[in-house]
View: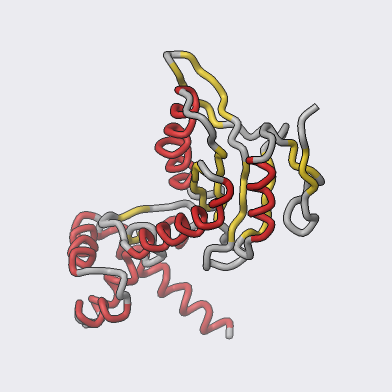
Length: 231
């Protein structure tokens, strides 16, 4: 028989955490319930949530300890899904599990774009979990403020059209502003997360994909006209 921890109904839809430790996972559950950022959490016990990994050439399934839904400043419709692993002694298989989750699984799910936002955190001291989780959220916010210098198309984001980095700033919109005579300086004031390098990237993308971006602009103009006529 495994030890259990009775959960709060307003934090977890399952009545008990079935723990694999004497106190570590129970303490982590208590901490999660005390954090105002936590919308919901669950211990990954018989939920069927696994991450495949390979160790010494053999395939295995990794069962992370907790899944936590966090309000990280983007509102209740865009919660962060944080996979938590409560780690005690170092083991070779644990290192392989964590490395696979962080470097392969999390990026793959986020790049897919249709399963929400995901991140991973290894907790080595559950009595300090609150600080560790908040530090992780702060780190992610700082990273979000730095817009990747690339053009991406993500299903479900801006109709799948080309955008700057992970932002919702479509290339067609910036090009439309530039065509209308707006200066780069004015654009950078309107979008302070962007840099002159981003504008050069957008211009270069337009030179290579002029047909695509001009079509996006026309479609948006047609939609706007249709809205006006409907009104």
